Amino acid sequence: MKHNRWTILIAALIAVGYFVPQAMTQAPPAAATAPALPSLVAVVDVAPLIKRHPEFKTKQEALQGEMLAREAYFKDKQEKIAAKERALAAQNLKPTSPEYLKAMDEIQNDYTEFEREAKIEQRRFALKNSRIMYDTYKEIKLEIGKFARAKGIAQVTDFREFEADPDNPPSVAEDMDQKLVWFDARLDVTEFILAQMCATRGVEVPPKETRPAPPLTGSGATATPR
Image (cartoon, rainbow, N blue to C red; front, top):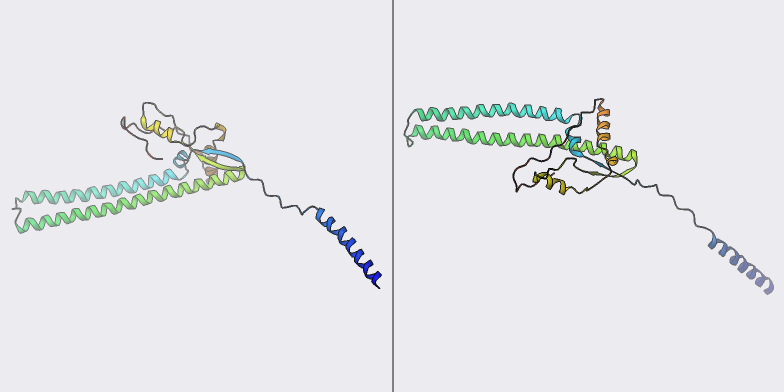
């Protein structure tokens, strides 16, 4: 009986000694291969993309027309207040008379209301212009992303394409302020992005324009923030 138990135990140890090393030497299951990350880079000049956007110019012109109409309204209102002042002056009333003080209060109230209304309009137009810029830039970024994903591009950097003038301090300062110092011209995808936006709308690509350098405002001028 003891012999049988030892035989069973030895057989079990042999089995364990055989199968454990086998299990330990087996290769672990292969891990899932991670997708290859895009490695290409590109550059784009956002400024002309905004300016040459298929709808940006139309929206800006519409806003400009609305602003001119309101400007005419305010000029007319201002002239009417000035006419009140001239009429009051023509009456030659004493500055301390009740009639004069009442008229001056009315004129002052007119000017106060004029300034309040003008500020409201200025803010309204500023917000409308901001919305146009926001919507345009947002779409451009989406178009850049769509193009980059399709081409396996990992990063797109903005740059400004213009010729700096050594006699124009703002242009030199703006050129030096750019973070992108040099790139191969083949990395510029600006025209491809513009063509993609226009193709979506079925319109022709607007002609390319040369971006002028910042205006010369004096020897101590600094570049306008981008």
